[in-house]
Length: 214
Image 1 (spheres, rainbow, N blue to C red):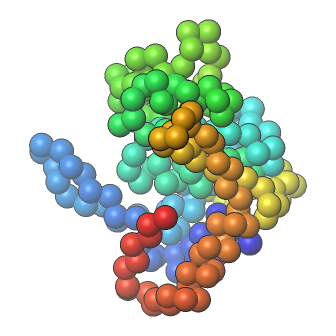
Image 2: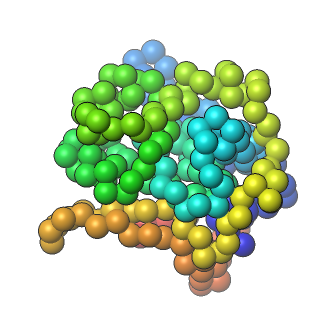
């Protein structure tokens, strides 16, 4: 079983369970929004369709795809990427531009999922990529009405995504404290093995909260 399949399984078993609580921290609104597993699974399916149908991403190719955003939709984006059989590369806007530019160039990503505020006014607009870069930046919040209206929330056909348990889940970069930052390829199998060990050694039930630190 791969990571996104475990999420889909839980979404089918407990569709109304809360998957993510997002805090709207703004001067005028500090309320929270709860998103269910059914919503998360459906939205990540739409993002997967977006990548395959509109961004010419090849399914099951272990292609690195950048994700540079925060909030609920960032999690949907991560799942959407891996549902296409490719690997997400997280880009943290709080990092120095040189570090993020190195990560983007070293990983070879050609597509970045982001949001308008970051893409147009944040570091993405301030030279993260080389001037000759042909990378495509997709502003999910800007495109979301069209995505929600025209792309399916149902799972992708298996034939469209030829990913295996030993396929890449993500590429995480080290801090670079001992030299140049290095990209570490994390597999679905290794990640699921870690989760299964944790569930066996530290079992918890619905309603309990687990803080995961690696």
